[in-house]
Image 1 (cartoon, one colour):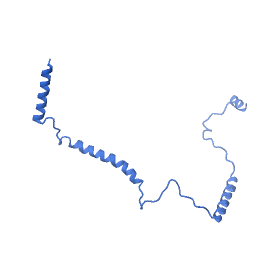
Image 2 (tube, rainbow, N blue to C red):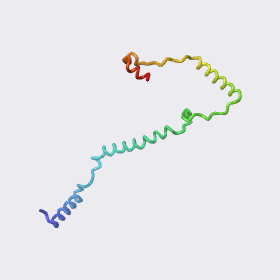
Image 3 (cartoon, rainbow, N blue to C red):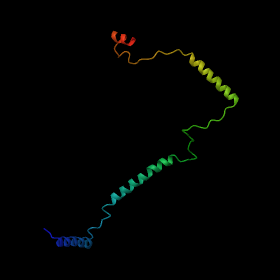
Image 4 (cartoon, helix red, strand yellow):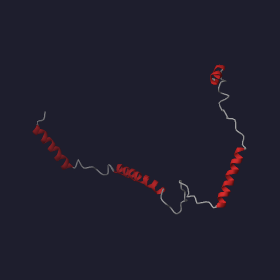
Length: 123
């Protein structure tokens, strides 16, 4: 067992060895590939948000697309009348379409309802 005084002496000797032999110095040539990889990852991490911000940038050569829609201008009386006629024609055309029977794609697969189920449904 090492006493307190002897333990301090061992630590001091280890420090002397490290400073005298440069054993504690990090060799930069050994960690060079790791540093290059770290720099590449850092550059990619900084470039990704910048790329999305650049995509939103106003570029004079890019097409003007807006998801909010354009500001609607006021219609002239002639255009309002034309729009009313178009709406009336659309409503008239859709009222001529007969009601469609609801399609049941599973009708061939589903079993026919039993007589007791039909009676319960009527009640």
